[in-house]
Length: 156
Image (cartoon, rainbow, N blue to C red; front, side):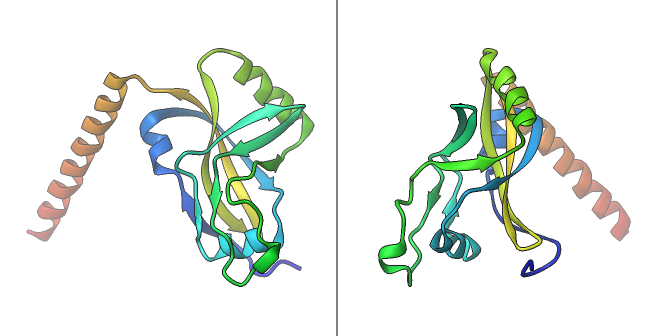
């Protein structure tokens, strides 16, 4: 039985949205050990320098740091070990076709609990150029100014 219903975000990779255009998103399970799950539930996980790759018709996430569980003793695993992602074969084949093209990469975007199970949101991404990043920041700032003006107008 699942522990809880609904979804709860554990960690997000905000830097990915700054550095990449996210073309498609895939929800996948993660192959984890018990102490890793307990540490992730406590929020001790980082996606900052992580990426995913296709190896032997399987998708592996690299660079995802899961801090060792405090009460784990010798059950703790290496914090940076590669973790296998659980997807359907057809999805893996489709993703592998995109990644084989130049310019696409797999970036973990978010880890969350869904009905008591750890899930990872994997993004098929294309890198942004420097001018694209500036455009995104200018658009975000303009949207923020518009929202601020609307709030001021509603007050009066």
